[in-house]
Length: 118
Length: 113
Image (cartoon, rainbow over the protein chains, first blue to last red):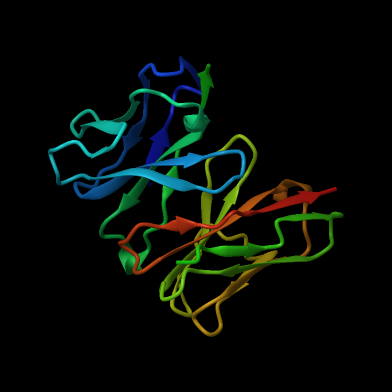
């Protein structure tokens, strides 16, 4: 079974600064997807960024980028120019590509609470 | 495009009572998921549907939890009887097919007293 570990329960950053959230995972599969989801107090899970394991190029979405190290099984999220609206829980998630019977639910880490200080 | 709808948003019940949650996925999405998110943890998959068939229910406590998606559109998750440890947020998500991005609803917060 796959596991996802987020070792930082809470991170704090000054507005306009850069912050990096860490995620490691354990899998024996060679092909998979990795995600970062944001969950504000409203509880709605919002996709931030997605990375396919077969792609060597790191994914970017505006101020959000990832550092994907497949050999190290590491998938960190970098948020540049932090804004007050970035404050939320951030979850790292894993999904198999070729699960038996088509099962492809997400496996989540425990989350990192990101605080933005004005 | 309307998002994933869930109701109710909040529910408080006493232990041993029953409760049901409803989810309406994004129109056209064939795959529907129910997740349980206990306070301080990430969501955990309970069950996955592909149209009206169950793909994965390996983590569903089948002695008390049940779910259905009879017409391949909306879905209901039921707990009977509820236990204190069932207090959590229940999230519904949907995707076009299993390999596409999952979109989440706002969740239902359940408190069992």
